[in-house]
Amino acid sequence: MNYRLVSGFETHVELATASKIFCGCSTKFGAKPNTHCCPVCTGQPGSLPVLNKKVVEYAIRAGLATHCTINAVTHLDRKNYSYPDLPKAYQISQYDRPLCEHGYIELDSGKRIGITRIHIEEDAGKLVHERGFTYIDYNRGGVPLIEIVSEPDISSPEEAREYVEKLQLIMRYIGVSDCKMQEGSMRCDVNVSLSQDGVMGTRTEIKNMNSVTFIERAIIYEAARQREILEGGGRVEQATLRFDEATGETYVMRTKEDAQDYRYFPEPDLLTVVIPQEKIDEIAAHMSELPVQKRARYLSLGISAQNANLLCRYRAVCDFFDACLKADAGARHAANLIVGTIYAALPTEEDKEAFALPFAAEEFAKLVKYVDGGKINFTLAQITLSEMLKKGGAVSDYIKEEDLAGISAGELESLCIQAVAANPAAAADYRAGKHKAIGSFFGYIKRATGGRADIKAAEQVLKRLLSD
Amino acid sequence: MAIEKQQLEHLARLANLEFGGEELEKFKEGFEEMVAFCDGINHAVAGDTSSIRGVDSRTIDFEDLREDTAQPSLAAEKVLSNGQSSNGYFTVRRVVK
Ligand SMILES: [Zn+2]
Image 1 (tube, helix red, strand yellow):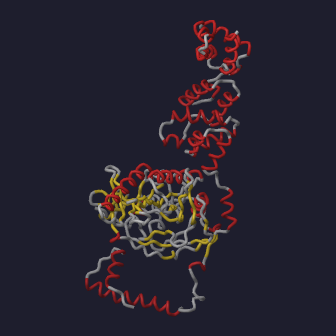
Image 2 (spheres, chains in turn blue, purple):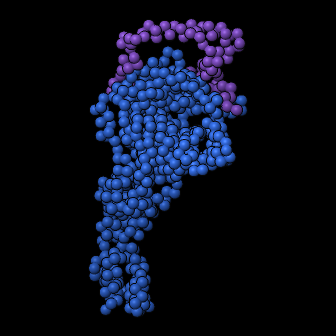
Image 3 (cartoon, chains in turn orange, cyan):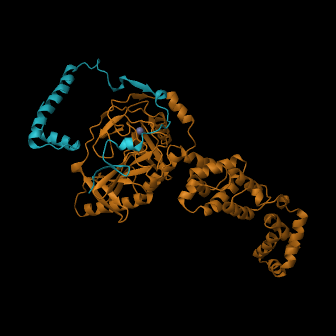
């Protein structure tokens, strides 16, 4: 039998607005329980929701960034279910007329993962189950979400990883969410099925995944589990699963038997929203550069593909790098120093995402410009940068004006003569045809000048001296 | 309009309601009346729905939506005063096994 993995994603992304979707309560994470609540977001009778403009704007941005069509007329619907995380016993969401439809995300291979739809909705409260009780915090209830539904176009765990990482990066670039999976501001439900010789199989859904690594593992595990069932002549049962991070296995939460029946209907407390085309155009015109566009721009500046990829992985790094470029720093040296020296000082993903440095981009740009102008060599720049990363401060605290005077041609000539005189054995080796021996003189010149000498120029002088 | 007992049980389960056998019978009657009333509306407009205002008859322009500014919330004691709570959390009987 020929099995093929078929996977689709439903991704919830919390929007970085100041207030909730239907009331003025704050969306700040980490407050004391039930302190960001009001009659609207706790579902008190008689209270009415009022839609937040920024939620619609952010969702439109997300739609435009993923090549979706924006529906100019859109309305909200009630999704009914009773569970303690929903004080109203319904969630206000969108059913038949989502804000955005028919988009895609392109993977590095050129393959496109279709985006079926993006709709806006409210988040539910947070539940903690302890002993005989369930504890409820409604601070998260009413926080705006977009749900991004993909087509079942993903056909490997690697593609799943790339899809999630690309989505996360796009949302961060356009500034609609911080997409912190560990804090729950981005969560994925993953559908998995195996098609057999082109015939679609029954799918299962793994709920609430909050780590890219676990998503990959869960898909591998679930595909293997389904394959074993099918190869044994059995049938995969449609079910909602939970992935246990400790054991790396999936467990059934509920089967189709007790599947939800949401009884959607149009939300009567909210008006149909009409978005003029000029508004959509305006939002499009003010969109920040997307990862693919930024990468192309960096490549055009002569940065290597590898460095461009490493820079574009983090929005904060791009902002820093762009500020350096604005301060006239040379792109290639700046990129090399960031990806080499600065990344080495920021080992974790979180460190690089935050990119909190003890100096401003303009200060870093000064250092880069010294290298660009040949006033200091790259090694000295690396050493200085390492010190600045440890202690902070200005470039002038580390490099004095007199250091920047440069080495005159005459000085360099005499330095090279001294270097050759100090190491006659290497000179003899070079003259005997071992041209690598020239490297022995570089160390002498670097030490004598504190790394300020132009080694390429010195090499020319040395070659001339040694061939005489 | 006749409602199947099974349908009622399904709806009751979705709404977290428990009916005893007799209660369900009684509720069935009331429920059938409600559905018949709604059905009447359907018949009244059959064929001509032009006079019926649809969902989209009342619209709001994007610009008139609420500006995104955070306002003070209620005091936590007030929020919690209508239900059972512990340490600032609402509490209910444990909902997962
Ligand atoms: Zn509120």
